[in-house]
Length: 113
Length: 115
Image (cartoon, rainbow over all chains, first blue to last red; front, side, top):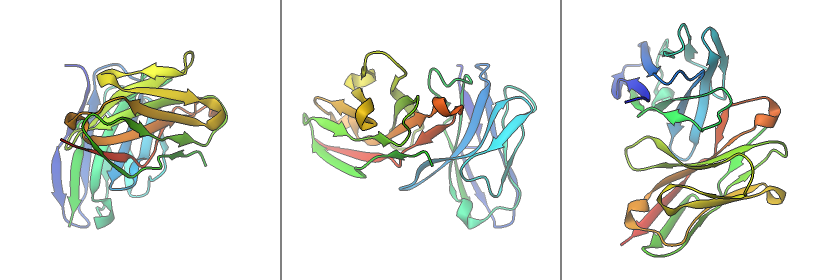
């Protein structure tokens, strides 16, 4: 089925470890973004991309890196995990104009101990 | 900074009661407006959206929302809620008039429907 696929669904990291959250979409959407969801905070934008090779920072980019080498994939990297990065992470995609709204992945629940 | 405000953090209703969740945004230019729903343990799903035209928008599952430009509001309504509507609801805005296509979310409103 067409949509946004995120892996893994759950992950536990130790402080200082690195990892990559994967996000792939098969709808040929140009716009992809990463959000983190924390209780009482809603969803906050981490990084986004308006096309292959183009990325930019969102509201809370510190501690995260992204790249966009293909239209389909938009991985999120944590270089040195911290307990403050414990959260649920959602990837979303849309056509650049956001015309039909965004399609969200099922999320990755990350715990940093 | 552009922002979205949802004034109710947690709403508790009995089944068959009417629902109205408030949403206000801060930008006076061109906006695209959305309501998303997140059922427990699931990802966000689009309930409805507004881009232009009729300010009363109908979405899925009997939900509707009204865009009132003069009040910078986009409130979500449902005449009669069901237990299955228990979820968290997020209002979101794209401030397209500012040349951005980023989706800005409110902090969410938890709805608990009591059978």
